[in-house]
Image 1 (tube, rainbow, N blue to C red):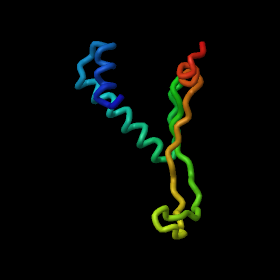
Image 2: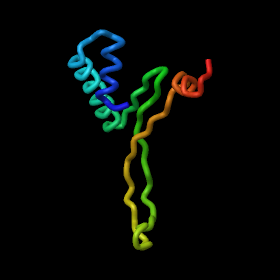
Image 3: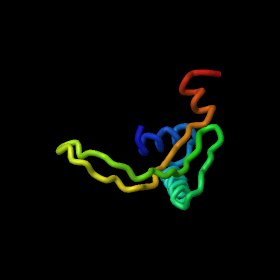
Length: 93
């Protein structure tokens, strides 16, 4: 499912116009990105938690040449699914 399909599903279940749903969804995603970029976590109970993590510098290999390369340290985005979400995916009640 892509963003347009998600907007269609939400519009069908709420009766709200697609333009408003697009605005709200865009603002929601933007707010999550800003919070995680600042180092905060965003917890949506029943859905999951968005956060950031640190990835240490490490040695790697160029898959094409086999040459050893250094991979710089970086920050990464983490998502941990909530219990209700996991249970729904695993069809538990």
